[in-house]
Picture (cartoon, each protein chain N blue to C red):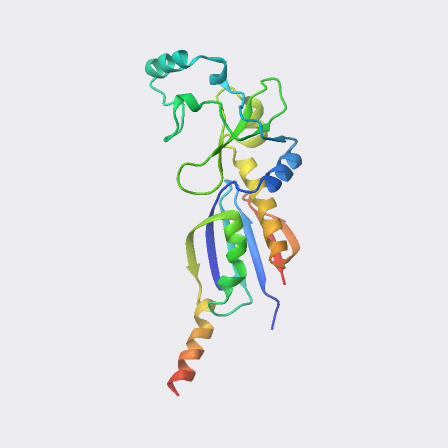
Length: 157
Length: 64
């Protein structure tokens, strides 16, 4: 090895996300600007009251309660709850989307995507890496599923 | 010379490492920059002894 770069993966490529979703039995819906979650069935006043009562932020830092349920695209997760994952534009100056959803009670999402959506993130990164390596002139010679759950793509040119 | 090999390891939490082998010197960075850019933002970059090998030779040649 001559160098090893550790990359903080960001969701930037919808084609790769769509492929990852298909691999996992999920569906990417481009252009759907609302995602279904616990909060979308409630008024803003109800959300504010709940936030004051529970002490929970309800939204990640940098996002307001008014933005709950709003997004640019949606990942649909088949299941009885009908909850969805929203792709919400990042606000930290980086290109791409954050994945927002309500994981409490959303057993279908947790089961398919992991309790922190890590399975979806891993599948997305695999698809992006394959495409980027191919564009850079590399061919995939081996895919290794490691015992620690990681996946290694061995490419050459 | 062996083919340049790039190994991309995607961890279970989605974090990713990109490693290059069979390439000596700083040129290995050029081989992976597009892949790294497509994935996201590089937060750490560890150089191994192989990375410095060619540069060592260049310094020896320059001093003669």
